Amino acid sequence: MIKNILYILGIISMVACHSSSKKDIPVVEEVDKKKSIASGDNKVGFDLNGTWGLTNYFDTIVENRELAKYRLQSPTWFAIILDIENDSLSAFGSIASDEYLIEKTSDSIATLTSNITGQQWFLISNDPELHLVQHPNSRKTDSTVYTFRKREDLEYFTQVNKDAFVIGNNVTDYFNEQLFEGQYLNSETGEEIVFAANGQLTGMDGFDSYEVRNYFGTLHMHKNLDVITFKNTDNREYRQYNWVFSDDELNLREFVFEKVTSNGKTYEGEYFVLGTEKIKLKKR
Image (cartoon, rainbow, N blue to C red; front, side, top):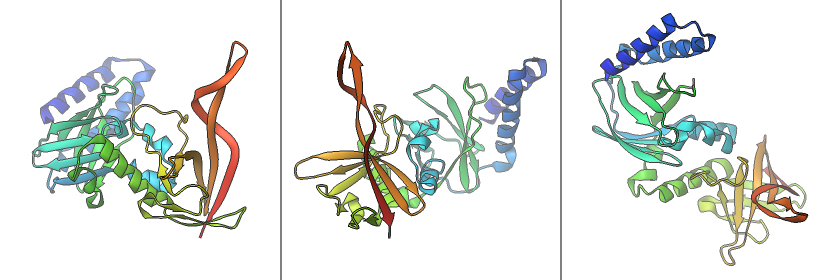
């Protein structure tokens, strides 16, 4: 594996020396950055076995209280969770999953491939983390160094059932809890709204459960806005809102079908846009 990396970096160095194109300069600088991360100083000297979570996804979403914009990071499509057991690595993303063999005698323990974009990524050990850096020959450059850290609290995501639907539900439950659970006051009516454990909801007239949209899969009709769905488990009615946190306030705005006009006739389109109904909740 080291030989392969040195071979690739050698090719890039040759291109850098003989190319006079300005657009090659940022690529060479980025390769140098990645080369330093993949240096021989970071040999695997710690236990890789366990569940690893992509911090650029889980931690960033919770910290910034936004979800949709961070699911656009391409590694989230194929590797938000890594499970490592001995020489086997299982990668799970919001669209695809895959299996790999790992090399513990090298600092670059695996090369992950995105089935969506075809891009390759080096998974590099950097005790106590794992770093994911893009293959330097990729057509579209992503300069971000993605970081995985061990997450015992996420082990249940895949240990019981590795089905993509189950993993997606676990991700939804995680963000339900991390982003929403708690007590709120409706700023207009003064009523108490409780986002409880297990997606239970009280105080929201006509609805008894809630669910954050996790943006798994490829069908997305909300134009990459954050979505929360209120449901009635008895009559199966539901309503969807865009959610935005601002300090201790949760601002909700309804989604409605986009109106499309064709041949003088107006009808509901396939996508959602923001409507006029707004709800402002204040965290207690």
